[in-house]
Image 1 (cartoon, rainbow, N blue to C red):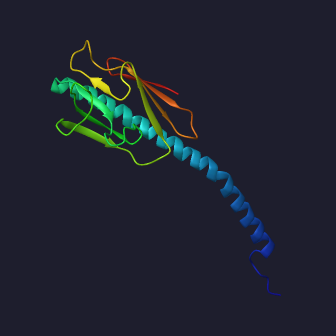
Image 2 (cartoon, one colour):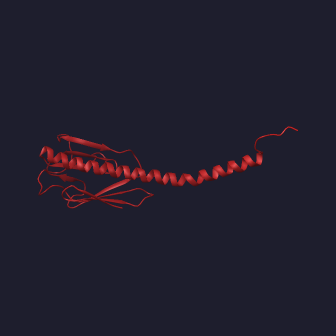
Image 3 (spheres, rainbow, N blue to C red):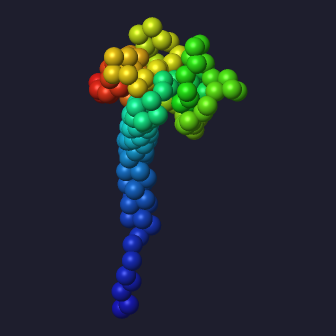
Length: 159
């Protein structure tokens, strides 16, 4: 008698159902991990931008302003660094030093500063180094991250 090697239809259906079930269990945790990684990446980009602004102000010896993009006025879209003027707003005559654009995502970013709602100032003088305040960074799935900027431009992270 000839013996057949292989799996029956019932065995194949059960193994396929088990694989599909395990995939459905992994998808939500993978999506949450992806969003958490996006949030951490944006956090590092903001910290890098803050240190860049502080160091550039020291190197150039001028006062710089960091504001949201002029056309959106929303920190979540991106920000620009320019040589400060009296009203702390970017216009066509200002010297633009750097700009950061972020892709559209579920991450929201807001700035709450001491005497400054829509800008941070970076000075080359140690007495008036940086406008202090904090960024709130969050998305729908994760707890908000608070990035506190002290008057010397150092950042402390609170989860």
